[in-house]
Length: 122
Image (cartoon, rainbow, N blue to C red; front, side):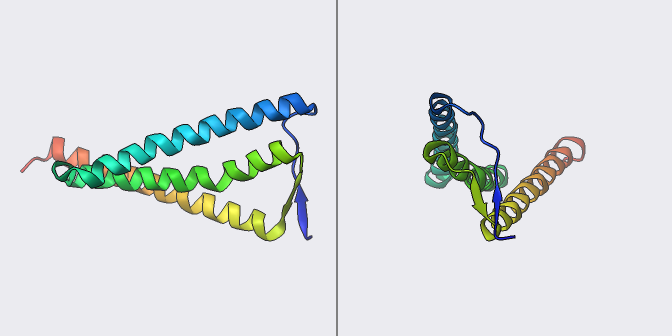
């Protein structure tokens, strides 16, 4: 197997372009939001606490998670292609699983941090 065929989101060209613009809007909103979080935490010295450190890492993991799937989906919608190489598919799945599992691991650590702060204070 050298490549996989992906199902198109729509058959007509107008709907494919609409899907491209919607996906581009979602991608840019995610980039802007996570970029603002990253910039705010990195630039303000008052936000250099453990919880904001976790939020910074969560924003970076979210950027990685969304950047593994949406660019290929946008390219498929824009250029009317339906193929992805085997290596590209494997890389996309592995990166997505890595970022997704790291994100949930970090959320678990953050929730445990809040639990300790509330239920077992110093």
